[in-house]
Amino acid sequence: MGGRLGRRADPGTPTARAVADAPIAWFEELGRHDAERVGGKGANLGELVSAGLPVPRGFVVTAPAYLDAMEQAGVREALREQVAGLRAEDERGTNDVAATARELVRSAGVPRGLRNAVLEAYRRFGPARRVAVRSSATAEDAADSSFAGMHESFTDVEGEDDLVARLLDCWVSVFGDRVVSYRAACGLLTEPAIAVVVQEMVDSEAA
Image 1: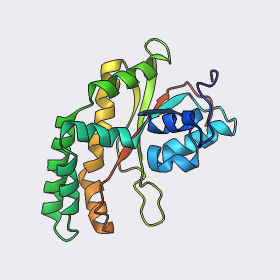
Image 2: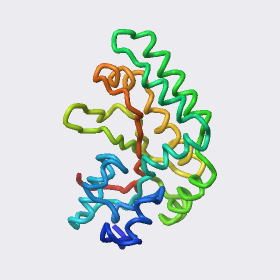
Image 3: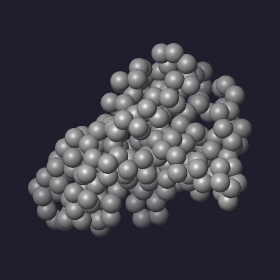
């Protein structure tokens, strides 16, 4: 693994506050206390890097960045309304909610400012770098729910356009049929959010 790209700052400093507000967070900046912002997967990768383990380099597109993208596109309130209307006993209605929500997220897309930030980070890996693009839901491995494995993840993503497309696919997967049904069954009617891990692919000998 190459040299570290950042360093975790004291949470009370202006630098730390700027990092917390940024749409992109490198693993070196993260720890378990960041799970709400970068999901369990992103937070745990930060802990592994801090422990000195040989983790392939990467960054996280934060959950607030996703929410801000939906806000900018004018669909965030509609998404909240869709989730608030979930009923576990209404399977057809739940599937309709999921389909409508996916269309809203897909139509929102990735705003230009965030797209530029993501691609700037991606270019730091070097030319034609293959990456994994992995959903990191903020509700994964909670005490009363587990969304692990329900959202999309992709490997061997190469090129800027493909990266942005897979990022959007991860966002859309927040409203997959199975995910929405599970939310309804758990009575989770609050606004969902998702972070997305972008991590270098490596040719491993062991894992």
